[in-house]
Image 1 (tube, each protein chain N blue to C red):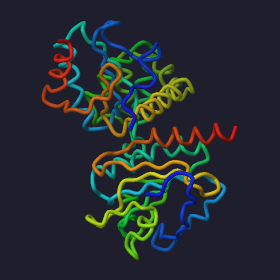
Image 2 (cartoon, rainbow over the protein chains, first blue to last red; image 1 turned 180 degrees about the horizontal axis):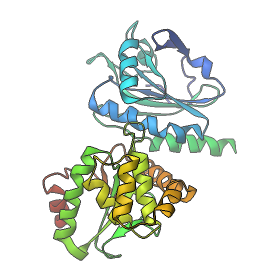
Image 3 (cartoon, chains in turn yellow, green; image 1 turned 120 degrees about the horizontal axis):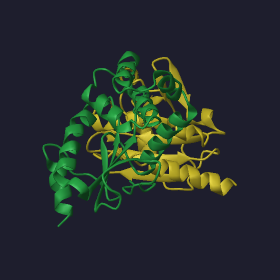
Image 4 (cartoon, one colour; image 1 turned 60 degrees about the vertical axis):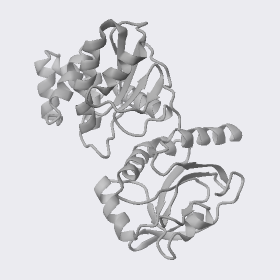
Length: 155
Length: 175
């Protein structure tokens, strides 16, 4: 798993059936990458539902949250609609899990991304990362603390 | 990740039971969450069983995007608090989870004998909105990741709360 002070590998993935989002598009903004195993499983729904609510807290720190799983763009579309999500879910679908592998958070056994969080600064450098046990929703407090540390370092 | 209540219970909180009770139970809840609805009688039972050994605090954690009425219902409870009727509204909301739209909230306010003009203006006031937001943010910082979430004497309770388990756990803490 990539650690703090590592440049975050760039990627470009579908965010909707007809749009792609590249990490470099978000330069100048802090980015929270939330890798998660799968759409629809109850725990993931909770985690993404929580970030849907906390994204307003993240935006106070100039940070955008992005969910990434190996699900297809069509699954993400349906899942986003069902849960009324207001942030992008990226499809790490083909080649399957390639981005998760680059970040060192691909689970070969299950063929899914592990539940991992990365906070990137404005320059795309990983400043904080956290691997959660698969069944446990890591919440948002670690992310907020990492963002506050970045604010302090900047001040 | 975090499992510590932040901030600790203070004067901004709605409390039931004596201050300084040996057990402090804090719930982060959403009025439209069905599990919170199931937890409601469990908490009443714990209060009944433990009497003045238990202080109970409720903080708002509305999942507004998942539950379209959750935010308004939280505001309604806080608006009722402005007229000294937080717990009466809290109970009405959990006892009638199918009546959380604006007509339902208005009806509860009426039945509680609130000044309705005041209630409507408090619903939109920044003080009431800020209380709900502050509760939510404190929940996030305390590691709340869904509802209901319970803290017992400041520590996240990760055990089962259904079918009397919460009362049994709390009772066990007294020994």
